[in-house]
Image (cartoon, rainbow, N blue to C red; front, side, top):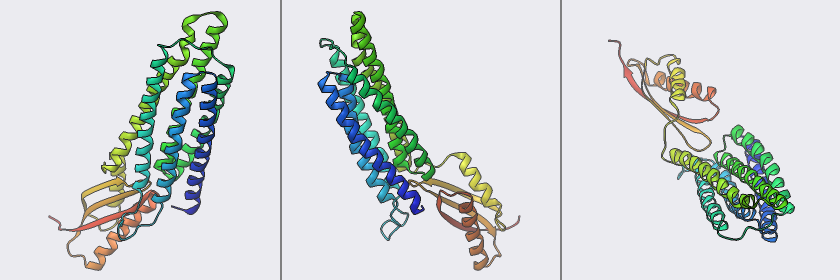
Length: 297
């Protein structure tokens, strides 16, 4: 990957890290000062985000290291490990939020604060900006850990929406004497926990698929096969496989070429297959080609 792409990904992770630390402090302090359960829970969720963002920063740096004798296929899966760590932290945060929200139903309802509402709104706006920013760079660089960080920001957007609505309902309940609305805060926390857990499950499943070397989509395999068959000298495809390895893809293909070809000719066909696939797919970093003899029936 180009150095400018790597630097943009790392910069985005640093922005996320600083933002998470800032928002964590605001939410926890305001939440405790004004007894907002959903804001406190969201603040601790943000504290988990700080750890998750550290993991994303480390994994992004390690993933871009060049291949070596012990890691001949590169370090790309470090990003997937970082993504899995983010998913686990998000799942723990979801359980934490749900527990404290349910607990709040068995305590006397507290009066909502406009300060808590403002804190939730600030988080909502800033997290939406971070989500769009990190997702754009993550997709551009095919950076799995940065995309995971963007999804974590999206989970925070859900949390902030629910917190804003919950605190707002509580304020309305206080102003107009509607008692059941005063439990809008903890109810919002339960809704937050559902969306956060759902997102963590989807991220975790994707990370496991890559770590277990699940093949790419059939559509991509068909495109690789089409490019391979277009190379002069290729008579058939005996097998074609491809797997994601973090931010890049590795393709493995077995082809049949005329049995009378010399070693040099076979080498040229193999090199042309590799060049053709990589020229048409920026994310393919390695193409492994095995040559089999083909004879006309």
